[in-house]
Image (cartoon, rainbow, N blue to C red; front, side):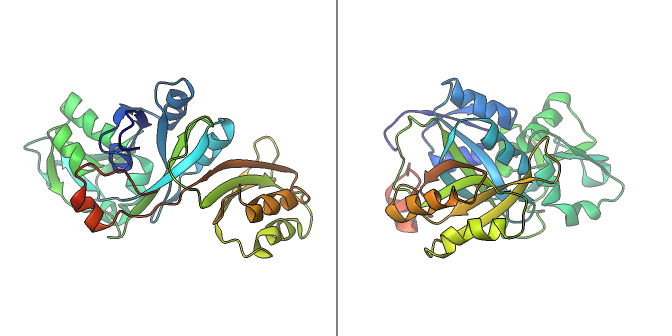
Length: 287
């Protein structure tokens, strides 16, 4: 990916930069817009968060993966550091409301409880919250956002690193059309399936992986819209679905599943070594 000039649609600029610092970027105001940008060719890749180590799963993006035809082609893990940003000259005791994305608010609950008299307002984006403060000159409002957002929108940092836990990681997915070239060798697969509502159905479905020693990395259930108390199961698997073992497991899964769709087979995230980072001023991600 190092020499290929492509565009990546995003809501998180930091995640887009982690994927490829030199890639052209297309900021989006919603996750739906990220999908639309890739589907229409405005961007080659889209990056969207799927889970956080503090706030948990971003459930709506699982639904979007099912509603659209894009494939997962990679993943990124990013250390998230939240800061309290405000209009230049504002003091923390003058703040009456705090803006941020719901995930940003959830990841800073302890800090927000220390500000009981402040109103908490959920917005579409952490950086967008910072932009609103700058554009509207909101001197009684703070935003929970990154240090980069403070630089871009010329805001003051009232307090640094306010997230509840120091090890605050967010996992992002890279999505693209099925025609996009693989970015590396795949060793991970995400599928979504449903099973009949009867005893042992889910156990039988998952046994196709256990019997082959395929690692079940994550299991997430989501309600099926229009079918109360029926569920879809999103599963991350430590396998390439095109390998013999993986293809046989999915073939057997069709015997137990009412529906099955492979959302993508892709390379799992692996951090670049410090040595590689020193050698390459613009490294492509080792994923």
